Length: 36
Image (cartoon, rainbow, N blue to C red; front, top):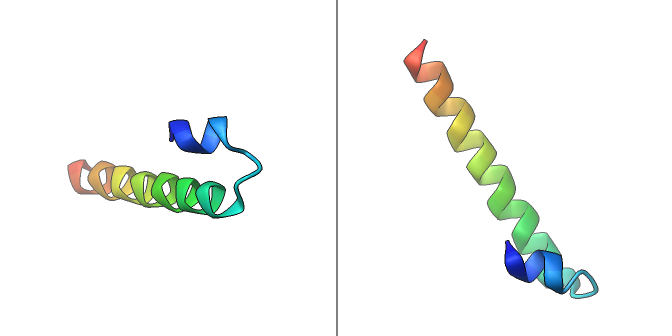
């Protein structure tokens, strides 16, 4: 996450940051749905 915010010009770093954020969001949604 920090790598993404510090190295915005590094395309590969930004992509990996986005992927990690997306998977984290999906995991959060899955946990929220399971609680319901």
